[in-house]
Amino acid sequence: MQRVFGAGILFCILMGSAYAQGLLYDPEPPTDSAYVRVIAVSSREAMNVQVDGKARGSRIEQGMPSDYMVIPAGKHTLILSTADHHEPKYTATLDVIAGRAMTVAFTSEDAKVAPQLFEDHANANKLKAVLAVYPLAQGMAGLDIRSADGKVSVFKALVPGAMRTITVNPIKIKLGAFQEALSLATMSLDMAPGGTYSIMLLPAPHDGLKAYVVQNKVERYTGR
Image (tube, rainbow, N blue to C red):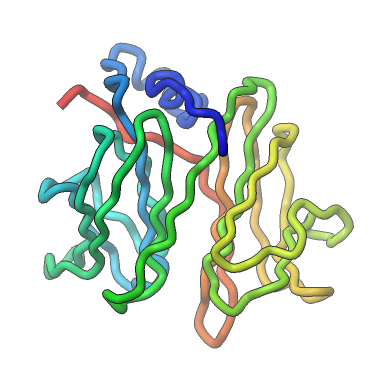
């Protein structure tokens, strides 16, 4: 079990340097805050996000995660609806814990299939970077993340639905997703000290693989 951070500290750690200037005078989230982001893996449309019936932030594009939403600890209802028709498409009930961060991945449009929940790791080292990988392509077992030339291993033998995390030196590098000797996808990564980054491995048409990297960000908190 990872260490539980205070909400204000986790907020600063998760967002790294990306929002440092923009949030200089914004209020700090309450100490009972939790941090939740969502991704609709199986959706082919942009989605709107609601928490307890209230719209949150801007819509999320196809296959992209939202920023971390700041919400009070406790039980909440999460709804993703189509951006054009506002029809509820994904629903989940969450019981979130103060000071922790979570990624909610909807991997199926079947309402009977529960979303995958991941407890995300914060970065307490301002000189290092945290890199996490989310294998969300079902049936893609045995994937490795390596340098693009295949010589340096970063993550080995990934299992679908099992997130992995490491702490690394903040460098600029090109990575590849490999299945044995076959390179299925490539991605570029330019890390900053204190930053946290997520590699998303998603299904692509014709049994392919889509891979990309995002820097973890927290939505702008205004105290409302």
